[in-house]
Image 1 (cartoon, rainbow over the protein chains, first blue to last red):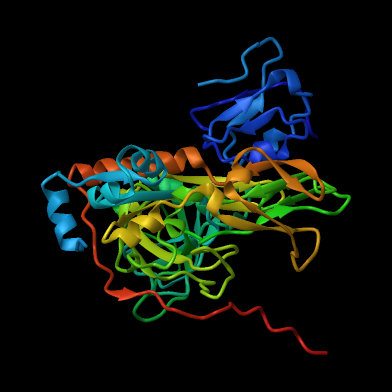
Image 2: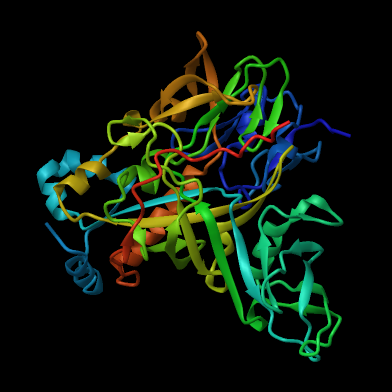
Length: 72
Length: 382
């Protein structure tokens, strides 16, 4: 079953490909023209569609008590 | 006019002037075209994309008693065994018989690169010379004879970008395509991509040494689905054209530049990092290397239609900006090829060339000037 919630991105695992950006329906995840990943939490609707879309499992549902979105 | 030999002498003396393809514009601005063309010896290019056409040839060494292996599983992923007794080819996209597409051939390949243990289970057909019936053991990269990465196809010269006209979300190898043309996905590193920088393959051919997955590999042949007749914009095709078959020693590769991928709704693939040095032999080669993203175009095709018709044509500058015009509105664009990793690879290759640890090779044979167009599978009659 698909779970909803805020996400954590493990930047150490991220390859900055952009599959998550394509999956995100609200443009909360975007690759900048320079190739960096930008996560705008204020745009995030917690749909978590990016979690299964990440091909390298770098995005996970966040601990609800955590404020952090970008990990290391 | 320079020769490969002259450039190699400068590399060996650690005096070669090496720039990344995405740094050229700045250099030309500072020094002027003619000065920069004379000064630069090598331009580094790179790509880091999911490349399904990937796999590894393995030789396990012989068991006692010998087994003529007919069926091989590596961590429950089947490897093709219709080769010699203890040879196999593990394809990147092969799913696990127990975990399906959550784990596959690409994961096995990367586990081997990482030095992790991999379970080998194989069944044989006993013969007088190979009487054994089966083998079950643990292998590591250091205790098998050979592990050779082979890409039948890599380094696409352009790739059509994707969109979706239908009312249903599509999960494809080109990522998520939202309904009603809501987004576009695209899959090259633009001006850093090797076959945009040397579009006519003036310097790349069979035997060209390349950076492959963290090791030094070679162009082995033209890649599959190689074609030369695609429509051009300037010097560059606007749809898939040439490709390269690459080969290299998997044992020397690095997990930073080879990563397994599970693409939702599609299956397993392998991100492969490739870097190709382009020697600047003359001013024409430098002119070609100066290409910018606003000069490189690709077709946007509709994945909702079986024949993927073209619905728009955009430049990589437009695609890279994050928003581009499609069907009368501005839509979101997402890459599927990592620019950041491509920049990292082009930088590593640049450092190796500057340090004298990567020498250029002259092709032993140019890649073919045909066919104009690739064939489709024949339709069944009746």
